[in-house]
Figure 1 (tube, rainbow, N blue to C red):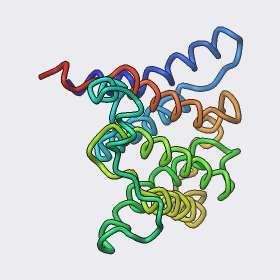
Figure 2 (figure 1 turned 45 degrees about the vertical axis):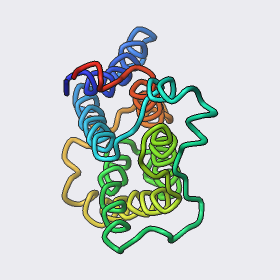
Figure 3 (figure 1 turned 60 degrees about the vertical axis):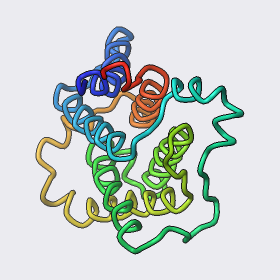
Figure 4 (figure 1 turned 180 degrees about the vertical axis):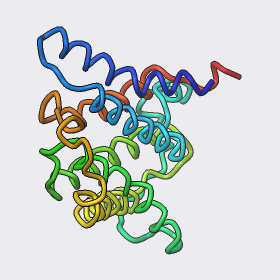
Length: 198
């Protein structure tokens, strides 16, 4: 059961890299390994957050019915307890660290924050068909976590984790991590239904 979500998460990255290779764009094995490490982290975030799928929308009678049953909070700071805020921030810190570690053009806090907002918003949107709450607080804390992860990279990443940097950071384009994250979210949302494996 676990292998299908991993394939759906890593698959888009592998396909993108293969297409880029066919078009003559080259990277290194070391860079590819680190992108897969980041995508395994993305898979763990999917597992923790419990995103839904298009199949749940079908079961609930369509998009209008799903949105009518969805739990949505657009008012900030309504979550209960400091623990929830801290866990959401901590969950996204690896993203904020890995982006500048793997991609030189993401050594900018605004770009890292943008990816944090995008990834978090995709997760919250994918939670609409589930019984979980789609919450503005989650987006805010996840983004804060990505920025904190970036700050950790700024403090220690460039000094203690800089071995093989030239091999690790040969990217396949300025939007490479965004393409991976968005395509993994879409793949999981459209193609995976855990009930098939019961």
